[in-house]
Image 1 (cartoon, helix red, strand yellow):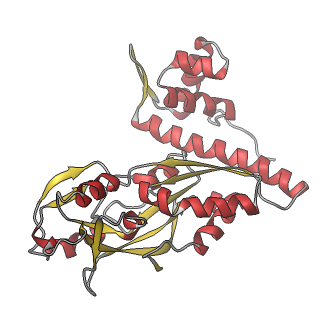
Image 2: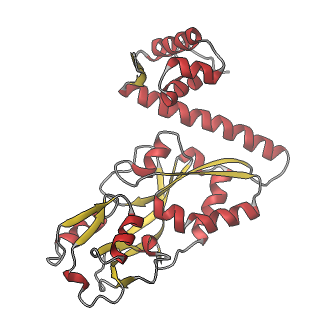
Image 3: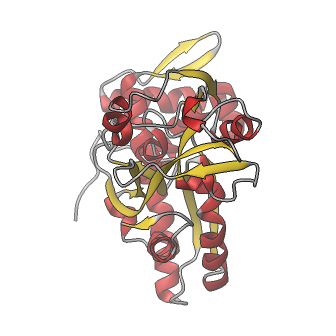
Length: 301
């Protein structure tokens, strides 16, 4: 039988690390966990001693993870989540075969609006014991995949093949591609002459080469916060935009949508999870529903 060593962190120590990181301080973490501040401090010092690195920067404003602490907390979240899954799946195997338990999903805005509602409805109808929780995250930088890497989500709906590499240790699978289209106020006779309205999440590396080759696309004069704001500005005649299909699902009649031709850009949408959670019953159930879904205007991967 394997023996624990002096460097093994116990689950309660991981919970302390996660609480301090999430809540930003030792005192508030202590209150959340029902411990004294000295007990939390002692636990963190013990974890730092076992790991051999300082995990938090202490200051008057609270505690902030160091780079080593960020790694430790991310792995701690994932380990604690696997312990939850262990219990849920063992109970399921001893009783009902239907998956049950919590399921944490990270999604970017248009996927949360257009893809997830019917998927979650079917999931709830088939498996009422699954409690889905959705976190909407901007798809910039590490994006939704970063939520999985940091242990905050079990599965992410993500854009794949972009400029940001997939965080190490994760697995990704494509679901569908969404083509881009030219968007403008309905009835405008020369939409390509309009100024450009854009937003930060648009145009990753999947569209950059195409974008650079189009001499008719100007530099954006309006940078909006999200695709909903872009549609609102475009429909009011303030410019044109180049947008993917998910962002255009359910667009109002005041918005005109024109194709960009056979060489139009497209981006791939898929899901990202960890190798361990990919085999869990709750993630497998969600993946089945995701694979059955095809939002309007998108193409099967």
